[in-house]
Length: 358
Image (spheres, rainbow, N blue to C red):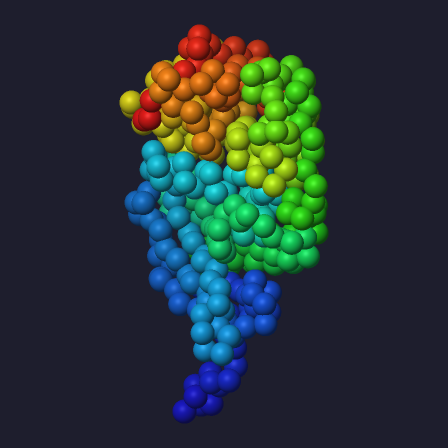
């Protein structure tokens, strides 16, 4: 009966809404039997739309690894949900895909924004369509260690799979666009030595100095988004820089988001209880997170300073004051010029201490 139906039981099928061939999906795993389960790929009628496809790698009938494909709308995410997505998918591990594709990839994560032709309705002039993305996730977003060989293989597999996946989704939605397979991306940051910190040009940015009270072993190495150059234009419209110890870049992350749709998402990561920041744009800070936005030539841009382990309270030692608030004004001023915002000045609390959670 299977033969008569034209579906032989031993023929492998394309996975995740017919987007990923067995070869492309199999490259995401290491010599395992790959199986998949998926939710329907329905049209998005509300901003909270979220559907998934789970690909699982089995060895000796035991689950060894899993990769999750997702199609979701980010338009209504805010607070912790907005920050969780931004933290995972805009880190310095992510490499811009290039080739006219709005998206990035690493050995563990990948995302591509769907064009507005995939939306089920047209928008009025001035109306802002919600950002809809296709993602792939495998394991931890910021693993403690990945060797260079596995990182290279993972990046190649994830970048090819995310483009095939978004093409399949666009075909199912009846969208106009199709993307070619991405070129071989610059080498992944895993397994490579990081750059020593220049105290007078933090993250390679002219005019951004590391405060003297913050200098030392905890702030001695940096990693910047692959394929981008500090102190210059930002291919892919996103650049992140993680700073810390050579094998633990967890002191501070500085991120510039020049894509207006992503900037709107980042602007919503802090709640109403966050303390406002002054200056030419709008911003706030809470805990170890500072977010500042400005209106630029191509639309809104966002600038983020995130301390992963901030010191809190009025009794915090002076050498553990808010590094994010200390570098934010010079960081925003330097990066704003690179993304066409002109001169953007930021004012922060005098001490940058006693910051409370939002």
